[in-house]
Length: 157
Image 1: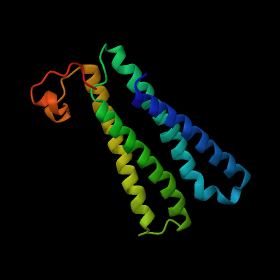
Image 2: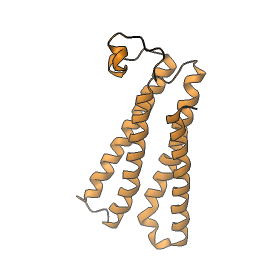
Image 3: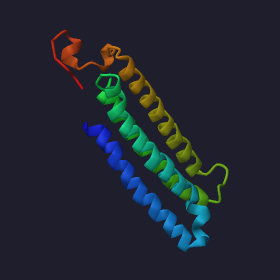
């Protein structure tokens, strides 16, 4: 398995443990459920389930088509967007709840930015997997510098 799909899978397992710990903690402390409910939900759905789907998808889907992943660089950018966005949402929900979900709270802007990063990551996955399955050549801006200058690089990732 390539490194970045492995990182998605390992991140997924980490989020399973963190989300599960928060869920268990909420069951033992009902007074805090309102503050942590959305963080728990995002860690389990986007963190555990989403990251597992992305990791397995990046590993399996291009191979079913007989191709390599179209852009490993795009995969790494996706991994960063997905993780930073998830932490922004998990932390932002807790802090926004502590502010009473007040209009104009700075945590509302953190949540919006984190959601934008999550959505960008989803688009990167769709483009990367679609191009991996269709086996289209990379545009010049995704090529390594030497290959863009006309030098042969062989298979690049």
